[in-house]
Length: 285
Ligand code: ASP
Image 1: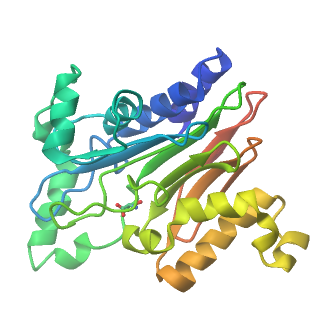
Image 2: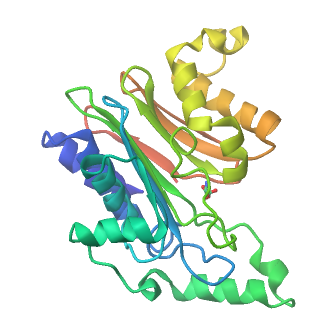
Image 3: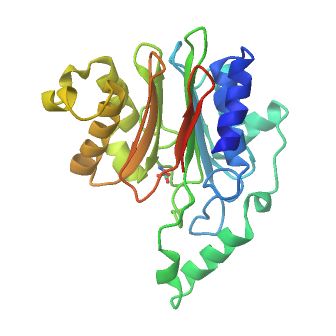
């Protein structure tokens, strides 16, 4: 968490753009094998890693999304390439990897993404005697970042290996615009985690953006007492709706259009942190 925040803050404090900060922070997290993104991601049913990522620019509303990648070590970098160099918003599988290669990306050996512990977890899940043990929730999770720069550019990104033991070809909420990520400079930037099939039902990141834009739709008592900021009330409201309508648990981090942070989760755990405009770090492990 600290490595991601420091990497992003270093760029922002030197005057770089929000997109550089978000990309760099997420690369740091993708490189951490303890997290479910890039190296160390969960394996799917076939014992392969398939990665999804998205980066969205709140000023233009353009996104770059990639899904079901097997040979890209840092999917968030490819998401940025799609955002900046493609007329399209989302590329998947072999086509996305071809686009990457055409732009000089190294296609990695799929084995490079697999850690011993992820392989061991997969083996256990295949063996009837240990399958139960392997379904215990793990601390590894999806990663995301949101940043706003001095020019008011607001960018959000999400990167994931998806759910453990997923069906090959399954794509969750994470790379879907409005589901696992959304950014609108007039509302805020959001990155989500949790049970993708539930998050997709309520289009959670866009829901949060809409609530930020017009918090009058929040239940009145939530605005008067309780959460300290509207941003926090919005994050809390999204999780209640996720539970009630999506029958799922999850979490989200967000910045409103003024850069006020909020985070909430209903999963057993979600580490998060932020850096304020003066460079003060808050980390909630
Ligand atoms: N939301 C991700 C997915 O469903 C998983 C996660 O956030 O842990 O692919």
